[in-house]
Image (cartoon, rainbow, N blue to C red; front, side, top):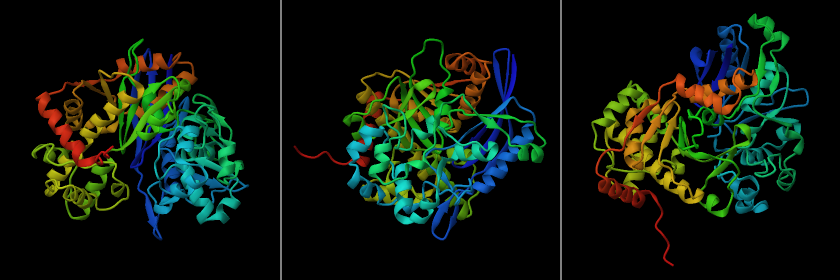
Length: 494
């Protein structure tokens, strides 16, 4: 059997249209269109340029030509509001916009933090959809009054491609508005927060058909009625679906490396107890009803945003240039908590990193190489801390760590992760998100029988690099203690 399917894969810094070609049990990829995804600051607020993104998506479809199907995945939590006629009321806000500052505290007055977690299983982040919608309710009530539907970004794109509305489950599960056990919209929660329940559309599972290209788009792009399939539309759900596992292999600990580092494992059922809440783990929906039990860690964003700052200052450096500069510097000299709130907003990240190191009494990194090395050292140690916490809360031991996604192009980060965690790291594939998107389409088209077969196909079709821990074990333990002292709050006396 031979199939050609298109993955429309939008990340927080770029978008791609990637053609998946399946034949005789082998899968190949070809990028047909790539475009930047830069947020736009207007009047002190931060938005996604949705109209430009949709234009670029149409170009991706046009360049791909005739395909058997297409599917869309994006980041989570952000959405567009539509009026009764299906018109977009405003450009979607960027999750890094400051409108949600302080919103969580107001929400917790109606639904305490412990109860919100017990109901939804979703970790705290200031930009969770529940907080964004409450910001709409309190800051622009006239817009929410006009709104009839809320569509998360991939659903919004799907609507404008097909004219059909719906809510894909894996992405909806990230909103902190779904019941963690019922796996449906929590009507009571919405009522207590005064969020209009009419906004929330029926859920659909990965693998179902959303619709076909509208007649207008068929005419504009000179394409037939291409089926648009509902894939695991949260990009992390797609990436996890592409884990290259052998038959019968238990899901290891994984890191989906991109703008964010998503560190976790796959569970058959939610784990939403108090220990999981205290450690800020999240329960998100996966393919076939699985649970992505993971923690969001600030990832390549720190490198991406630092590079933007250095470009403003006149330094034209590629990511490989930055890695080479970092390798010249002493590792593990200074540490930051990569999830410190001061690092969320765009801007001068290198200066903020220096301030954090000075505040904690550590050597202050000077120059581009030292700042970059500080980021890599801090990320690798954060992975070690999260691995320990994951084992603690799940009661499992993880002898292997699998890294997937664009971030694994940094061999330095992969090796430092193996060194810090003291377990082997397998890295690959780079295009995990697109592959998971494609895999779900191939299952829906019956080219592959199930997810396990898709993962085996990915394993034999794409290389996986292996990194073994290096260095002195005792020295690594000492560095880990230094990291914890630098970034963790002191323990309270009993």
